[in-house]
Image (cartoon, rainbow, N blue to C red; front, side, top):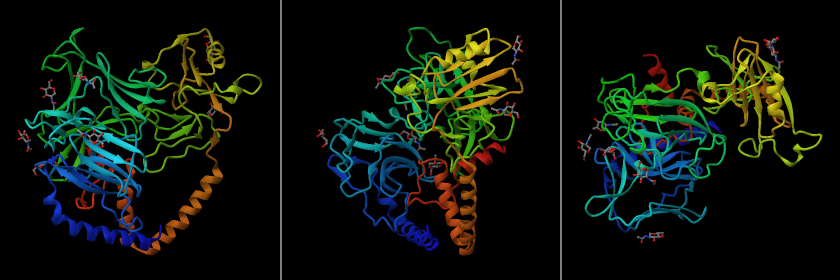
Length: 508
Ligand SMILES: *[C@@H]1O[C@H](CO)[C@@H](O)[C@H](O)[C@H]1NC(C)=O
Ligand SMILES: *[C@@H]1O[C@H](CO)[C@@H](O)[C@H](O)[C@H]1NC(C)=O
Ligand SMILES: *[C@@H]1O[C@H](CO)[C@@H](O)[C@H](O)[C@H]1NC(C)=O
Ligand SMILES: *[C@@H]1O[C@H](CO)[C@@H](O)[C@H](O)[C@H]1NC(C)=O
Ligand SMILES: *[C@@H]1O[C@H](CO)[C@@H](O)[C@H](O)[C@H]1NC(C)=O
Ligand SMILES: *[C@@H]1O[C@H](CO)[C@@H](O)[C@H](O)[C@H]1NC(C)=O
Ligand SMILES: *[C@@H]1O[C@H](CO)[C@@H](O)[C@H](O)[C@H]1NC(C)=O
């Protein structure tokens, strides 16, 4: 963490980027059978913790396939947009490979990434003749006649570029793995992933729907039995849903609808929002163009576990008034309780010692709360809040129950408690189970944090502006999520992060 260390890193990167930029023209546009490469070794103490080693480029030079280095020793096979260093695609987002000379990437008909150290293999399982990266960022394994056998467009990660077809057997998953975008019969939905995915069925408890766009069918109708719908970002500036007709069954317009011919994409962000961007070539940055969710409290978990979000309000608080809400660091969600250990999925509160005297949880009650996205939840009608609570108390899979005294609606939540909505209506009551041993974020920790932070701040200020600027740059690179790249040869010190883009975008 020493400042000189950062200065050293900065200098080395600068030298690297200057010395390698002349080599970028030699990156191939095609890989043939027999191709093989390994990540470049570099001593881990002096190399940047994130960097990019290009392997294949598209004809325009806009996109590049290569090794993306993260956390010093982790390697991902990734496609990046070179002017902005944005990652568009990752071969195997759930596992990272080791950045080591034993990790090998080759093409023998299949594209194979093989890591004997972590015993990981990723493969396209094809028998092709060549590999190319198209000018729309699509990576293809092709036959001699240029027929695609495999394409990265069929396996999107968190990003969908213009004209890329998104079908009902695909999903976009945010880089933290918490959220996904999927298609239903007549809608597209954003889901919170509450556990391990088993098969592709959408179990209600594992995939909690928090945003839904049903096709309006203004230009074309969805016909039963005519096949599933699919979606696409069009160059005219909207997310279209389609069935068989070339006319869309639904149109979600971007701000730039019919205005720009610039490159468009949508990305499922780590906060669970689906955002659209266009590439502004003069500013050399991605500009925010669309947001599925515009109100913070409508996000899936804006205030973390047992948090309270007040619509139109400015900040998060906690369901119990005693705990202070802790904002998360660098894009991580904040929270009220550290609900660690088996929080999600089937385990819940159904552990062995759930029977008998010790329930393993205590109860928290709060007036003036309602569940988020309640229009997407199923409710039961009960005569009283007590009856509603009883439904939850008896069921070890239940984490909470919310009752609306006016309507008699009772919402039973059979997944860990995230952020609830605050309401002025005190007759809306909430009952929540809190796992015993769920650690509160305590104030002593906060105070220590502040003191340490202040001390650190004094040290940093003493060191000088040059280092500060480098630190800031590094911070930017990290803040969105683990998905950021700062490719050595392509490093663009003038490019902005998506977060600063958001600011400029929302100011429009
Ligand atoms: C791709 O490259 C062309 C030509 O350099 C440029 O006009 C265009 O804006 C680039 N597109 C993206 C998305 O970077
Ligand atoms: C390519 O290499 C992989 C891993 O060694 C192997 O499993 C596969 O059979 C090979 N494919 C062809 C077409 O030779
Ligand atoms: C991309 O490739 C397609 C087909 O090969 C071509 O029609 C199009 O003009 C290219 N676009 C750019 C920006 O190079
Ligand atoms: C997307 O689907 C449409 C309609 O089926 C097809 O014409 C188009 O070629 C597809 N685009 C890509 C990039 O595969
Ligand atoms: C996904 O669905 C499309 C049609 O929607 C189909 O052509 C394709 O074979 C499916 N892919 C897989 C892996 O099931
Ligand atoms: C928290 O404070 C609010 C208003 O100050 C009060 O209505 C509510 O009952 C309190 N809740 C708890 C759990 O103490
Ligand atoms: C709920 O409604 C009942 C009957 O309408 C009323 O007696 C009771 O006071 C209400 N409770 C709250 C908390 O508003």
